[in-house]
Length: 158
Image 1 (cartoon, rainbow, N blue to C red):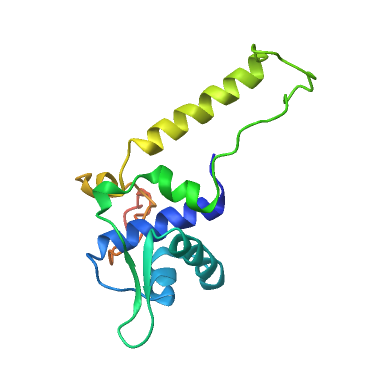
Image 2: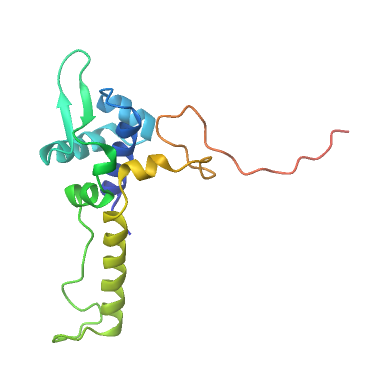
């Protein structure tokens, strides 16, 4: 659906939004979000280049968001690092569609548009505002909770 780079960017941004303007280093973000530090450094450079995050060097330095999480859409983050790919050539090899796409090409285009629309209408603040427990096996960035393991039925001790 989206690239690993885009997923990592979203994880990092959600983590920073949860930190309430406290600067966090690449190492802190990497540890909390379980993203390889070297890869994360490149992602953070891309986010900094388009001014979605601010980088502060030195003691007490780190990354912070440049905008309120409710004013920052998921789509902005994804587009900053690796935009959602569209097919520029027919996946079935039809040399020219004219204005009418083949059925497969049209479906793929529809899905990409729906994904972009949903990401555009969802802010980072919206993601943080969802009440309730985390989904099983999904540790929310910034929490100390370990992933929830599926319950297994235990046998009584003999």
